[in-house]
Picture 1 (cartoon, helix red, strand yellow):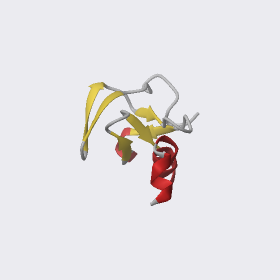
Picture 2 (spheres, helix red, strand yellow):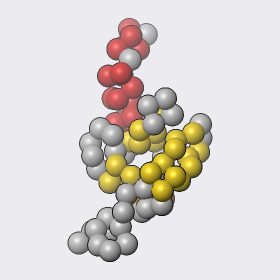
Picture 3 (cartoon, helix red, strand yellow):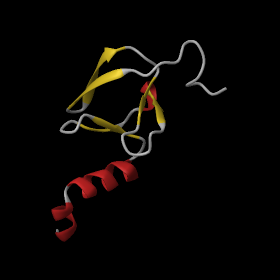
Picture 4 (cartoon, helix red, strand yellow):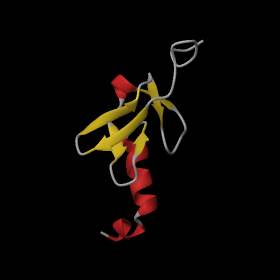
Length: 75
């Protein structure tokens, strides 16, 4: 059993803000919008305010941004 399983583990609902986030519904983790991987709230560092999505790491965040904004590849 990992730390996201068991009786105390549930997915949080978060509102992502610029440089911060607000917990709407308490939980121990959120899911990465791209990989589906569980991210512990205390480890949450990457998200999109515009899309209200969390990302597991910077690489996944950049990949998602490039996929959603193909014009960025030409810069």
